[in-house]
Length: 359
Image 1 (cartoon, one colour):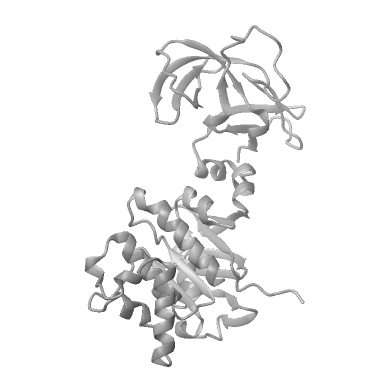
Image 2 (image 1 turned 30 degrees about the horizontal axis):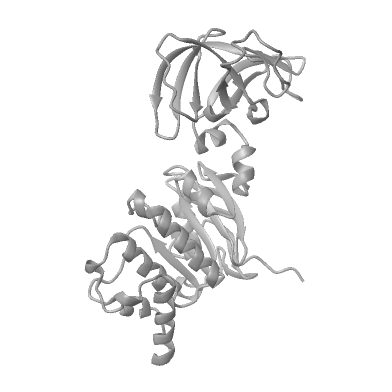
């Protein structure tokens, strides 16, 4: 018998002032799985989390935990009965309680069992020696660890996390993310993490649900959603992109880099070809006049350097293309700072290009 999702939401709708903030959203999270609800501010991510937690009611749709209905527009399990843990960016620790008492706050039952659970979680998050300390004595990273331990203490089946790492400095963020992920996986908790940072979603998620204007526009594993974006906006959300424009004639689009296939696109349709800066390379050897390029490289195209900036691990070079005057950016994995006005030839990775009809 197939195991039901730990969390499933079906066709959730929530409107405010006549505007659908959450618009027909469905998703499922299995036990031990981390799903990231990713999108820009205001797209409905946090509202979706509040509906699942039970602090707001949906207008339509239903929410299920382990195959059991917990909420629709008639039946409703209260928030405290849903076995859902919550973590937010402000940590919300009780300032008058010690670390150990903060972690024990939501526990009920025998004192010895509660103490053992607190000790177990403090060890998992590396905070055993701080059991008697108070929140004001802790750093931001330490407070985050305590908040995680407190949220996990009652053994929730589901953990909802709303931008929990945004209050940490860059130096600590990756370390805390990794430790948090390890602890959540060890507990077998199903996790729904809300974030607006693509790098965070890529680092933590088993699955990403990309949200825009109240809808989930694409779902998939991080590799798939990055390498097969559903549209130009999805591609651009994960990184800078260059856009080459053209029109389709006979399922082909003519560009400075040769012809691109556009199968199934009607003649006369305008298309945008998106390519990330790291997939452009400078053709130092050929200069546009040497051996013919391979099929994956296409035709070399000449551009004039507008500016070049050193970014640490690579250089970012901007070109004005001879073909149409457009600006393309190339990330070069080395220190390469050509002078403005220098003509250079560019090649592109055709297998890394995405062709989208203009809508």
